[in-house]
Amino acid sequence: IRAWVNDALAKMDGKFSAMYEADVKGGRPSIAPEKLMRAMLLQVLYSVRSERQLVEQIQYNLLFRWFVGLAIEDTVWNHSVFSKNRERLIEHDAVVAFFNAVLKQADKKRWLSKEHFSVDGTLIQAWAGHKSFVRKDGKDDDDGGGDFRGKSRSNETHESSTDPDSRLFRKGKTASELRFMGHTLMENRNGLIVNAMVTQADGHAEREAAKAMVADVRQANPEGNITLGADKGYDAAEFIKALQDMKVTPHVAQNKSNRKSAVPDEIASTEGYGISMQKRKLIEQGFGWAKFIGPIRQVMVRGIKKVDQVFMMAMAAYNLVRMRTLGQVRLEVAR
Image (cartoon, rainbow, N blue to C red; front, side, top):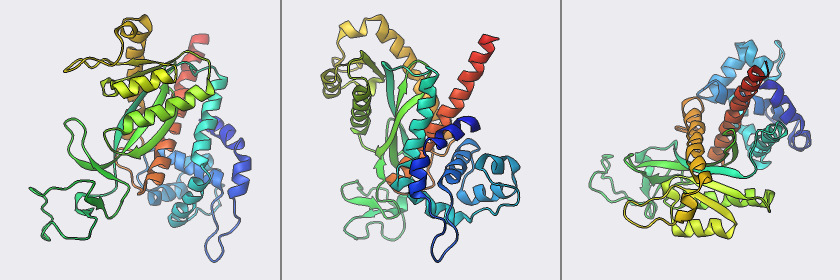
């Protein structure tokens, strides 16, 4: 993994040189962006809960120092400087560039499919509680007791005072919580994530994000025969038509519970459709890993841009772990 990270960061030298500042005037020295990226990746890989704990581990953990690129005698930065310098990565889309650089390495090894994809979304709990969800007009509607039972609250009239970008949302049998929604596009050959994004949580976010990510794939492969697998939640006439307009074959699970499916039966009866129905389930592994090992079950940052940064880094880390496994499997087969 470190070898792949070294290669990816080496290709970002031009971006880093524009970002790097030797010193922060009137404060502590800034962090070299490449070291900051390595530390953020370690935080995901080793399930380190906070930046304060991460800095503490880097101080005494020789493995962490080696991965980040710090000598034994080098001073570790303060956690507050760590937080401040992450803003520079957002401004320059550094995490997105890192994600793409990792994908290019997988592409060189021919691990990516250019034609067959799957899409899905997951809920991300915001770093905000119900008590922060107050009226936008400033009126007090909880009588000072923090008891909201029997009181109507909605995203139209209320917002979180700690994270205004989050939205009160529920899906299925889950409780209504302040959340974001993460979306990924997976290639079907080896289950690697080729695109990821975070949106505000609402009933249309999954399909709108899917259209945006598929449009990027179509732009990169304007003439290929592209298929897109998805679950029943994407079986909507408007979404299926949008895919067909982009000349993408909709391998979406048919929802025939109480209406006619928008997916044509002639598509659902093909062999490729059946394969997509099996392959699309791999996308859940990425979400499961990023929530169990990574930090996206409940993010520890506020604001959609920071949440998107954390989500992208988690998916880049997942790809690196999966690439490591793919490399080991192929090595064993070769032996």
